[in-house]
Image (spheres, rainbow, N blue to C red):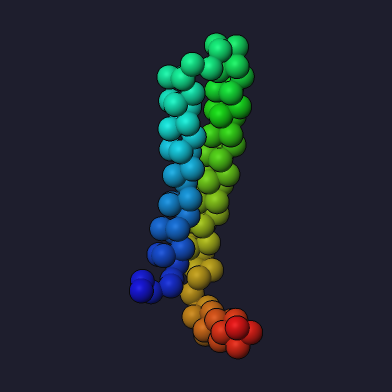
Length: 92
C-alpha cells in the first residue's frame, strides 16, 4: 500500500481530473451516434459545459494545494493524521 501523504493526495487529485477525459469519450460517442443532430448539439453543449466546470474546479483545487504546500501547511500534521486514523479505526 502506498504511503498516505501529500504526494498521494496530489496523485488522487490528478486522478480525479480524468473525469474530463471521460466527458470527451462520451462526447465522441454521441458525435458518432445516430442521435438526431439537434439532440447531439444539446448533449454536446451540456458535456462541454460539465468539462469546463470540472476543469476550473480542479485548477482551483490544485492551485490551493500548491499554495498550501509552499506555505508549509502540510508540515507537522503527521501526528494529527495518525490520531485521526486511529479514531476512524476505533469506530469500525
